[in-house]
Length: 372
Ligand code: SF4
Ligand SMILES: [Zn+2]
Image (cartoon, rainbow, N blue to C red; front, side, top):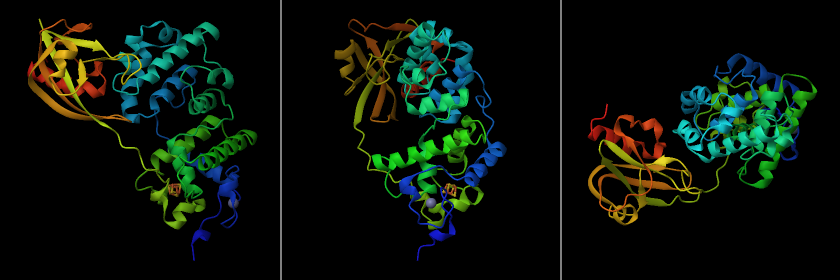
């Protein structure tokens, strides 16, 4: 016999199985109360928590998508010092925005954020629109960003479903199919939407607190590996915990293989300057500054850039979401017409100016040339 009955249903509070997982509905009031009181007591203090300025909230949400909190912590304040308002972000050159984004990855987010800032300046008086539909129409703003920013900044009753929320709800309701399936995704979205609407209707807390509480539970307790169920406020209603299958959920669909690309990276140095080029628009790391690089063995650098490869400095592997670079960096001499780019003084060679994918090369070059 299954010991499901140890857990009450999180939606109807009845004995399981009751069908709530399939039909969806708001998490019951005591469940919401338990999560909200836990959140008020245990939320980590982060620089964007308690923030009231919608622009700063937006920046934090964009940075946090697909990036670790630790990496964001190092860059959030610095980015906002450089671009303290939508207007400042809108008028900055794109290259300055990408440079401030270095290390966060997924550079298209930064480009879209800046495009959106420009639209806000042109059409919304330099403000973040408080109307979810107007906000959703901005470049790069998907349904997660709409829900997160509009609920946290304006108390809108909209869900914000990220990977944390998918994991928490998959476990709480014990959804056995992968959330990549549309039907499963719909159940999760429906429970999230009904729950945030109930929080708003019953005026429990601002909806932004509720959305953040669900995400925070996923970050602190309901973690991908080794969830801390014994310290989880939702344990009395958690079906996956009762069944002992929490860690196996959410189910994953087989991941497509990432192609491995051999990449030659050029470190061309002349008069105490190093050659950097802008990555072409549209591709990987589009628009960011990097070292000249081409797929293939080192010799391709000569035909591609007029750079003759010499001593190898370092080899490394960089994993992107859809591709892996097996890279090697080589000291190069200019033999043809070098590509259009810029020669940055070696004294300014700091790894933070480059996307993470190039840092091992930059570091090795700095070491080889003993740049302080
Ligand atoms: S009881 Fe465990 S599996 Fe269930 S929501 Fe809490 S941490 Fe996640
Ligand atoms: Zn139920």
